[in-house]
Image 1 (cartoon, rainbow, N blue to C red):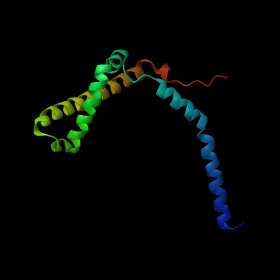
Image 2: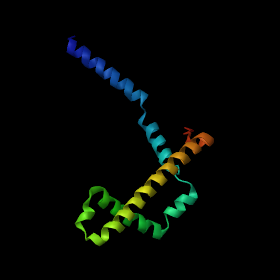
Image 3: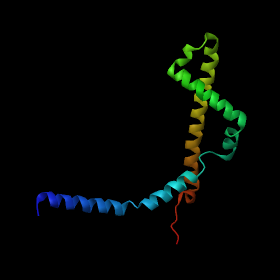
Image 4: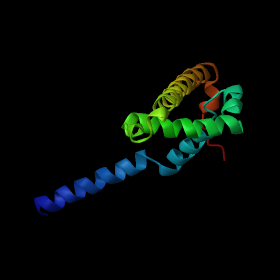
Length: 122
């Protein structure tokens, strides 16, 4: 057997070992479980899902993109200040919600670890 065939067989064995260690069905089950867990407390989620808040978030997101890219300068000068204010408020809101998600997730992971367990029962 040539060195190339030995190397090829060695690589095949290593790939099979990796496939055995990473069971794709288990990864899929874990991802489904992870995505099914709520990331925000119920009261924050209810506030963010109100129609008026959703509309303001879309408008604020558009303004934030305009402010970040600097394209707001192409609009009339009377709109600059309101666009900057709405954009900054949206960015602040995004940061606050992200902080709440991190704190809530860590708190939930510490106090309720059983929510994160994936059981493989027959």
